[in-house]
Length: 91
Image 1 (cartoon, helix red, strand yellow):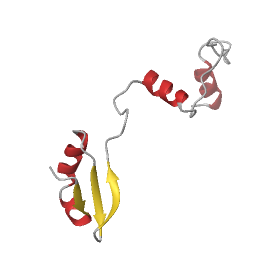
Image 2 (image 1 turned 60 degrees about the vertical axis):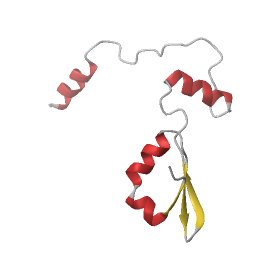
Image 3 (image 1 turned 90 degrees about the horizontal axis):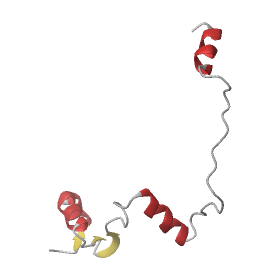
Image 4 (image 1 turned 180 degrees about the vertical axis):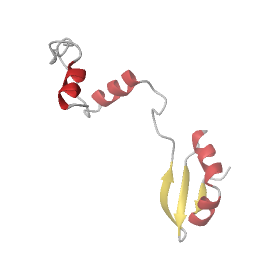
């Protein structure tokens, strides 16, 4: 299994390269013989939302709320506000 492809080869064999990368083998693409980019699998692509939020909080990208969860107050006092609004507009 190769780990380096020219840009021309990479364009022609993209599907095979994606399969190779998903199996855990990063690939380097060269441009005029010099390494240009590295293709590697996305880390955490299959993790759940809670795991993603925890990971983001650990590296400082996200601040978790410190207090308990609150529910937002209802804005519409009576059900059917949308229907009444549309009826008032004549729709």
